[in-house]
Length: 351
Image (cartoon, rainbow, N blue to C red; front, side, top):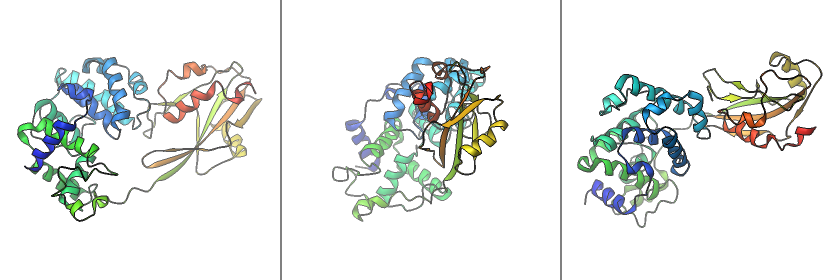
């Protein structure tokens, strides 16, 4: 039995019941693939269901306000995916009359759609013989064939794409592509792969050479950047607060946050007091203190944010102030959302 036949046989017996496998609608396949990029299935599934309920068709998504889309996306991270999702929905409606292109070449032109997503839509929705290559596929192919070319370098990307095309099953491409990804997620998992029960174990190079844990090979990661965020949580005499919208091309673009003072290192209350006039327009008197002695470390893919929340209580009435309950209506980073959750019951509220 060939490699692809073994994958198909395994998939027929082990595939999980997932909502996007109940359809070939390119809109829903596209939606699921964008959500599942850099997201585990268990985490992504509730978001997929929420998006399908809120936006049953690409027309509904295209007509939505960006803030509505970002709020629904909140917690998934990588918010550029949500912005691109919204942009592409509009493109499909305005330039393609609501129909997704049926070829890889046209699909990959869409914003936010890369090689993997274009291949997934083309093969699953239109049964085009396009190979999908995601993290799971890289792992399966590199282990089975014993390939030590780094998967995150240009040579590796090209090599594995060609190999994936060579071994695919074009007659059953829809099930094969989903099968090899599922196989990598469950059988050939990153840690503790189920090698003893694997249908490929007799011919797997990595297993035969006792080197499963060495594959796939990756180039060294990008150096992590440290940033220091000081959020100024202004509370007026009525208990109202205010948010600002991030507009710069940086992390969390178009999301909301408290007024921010970014510094080159950790700072204390003296430095905060000195910097406040350049950020806030408050009349005296106002009182400043830390909401917690502990610094929150929020880890992103290539950045670690060392964060403190500074409470700034003022006797002035905030012109654009809102209650903590109102704050929850806005799309915010998880870091801010977690702080808002505890805001009402925080010890500082009645101080």
